[in-house]
Length: 91
Image (cartoon, rainbow, N blue to C red; front, side):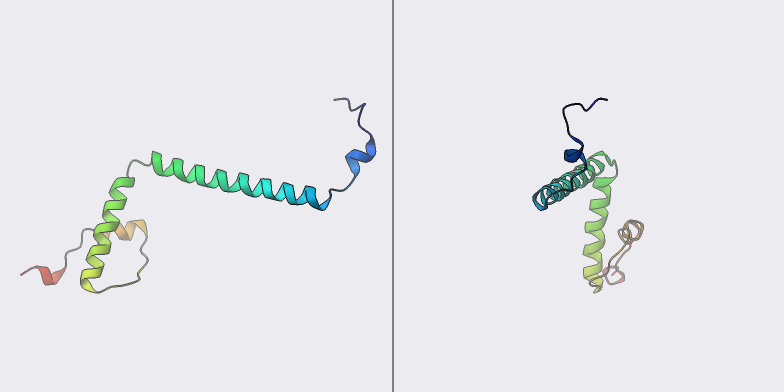
């Protein structure tokens, strides 16, 4: 690669404040776009996503019925909780 038309000073010089700000802005936008694109793709390509959402809704409904509030469950715990039965409803 030959850089005949470019002086050494323009290659070595430090970046100005505006250039750094612009670079950070572009990197932030690129990072956010990449994150949300990958998140959307993973959600779209996950074959069990619909089942997970249904299990979460059912587990939250059951938790409200038995009086448990503000509990954060993992996916595995959520799938187990979706199959629980409220003992008060067994009459």
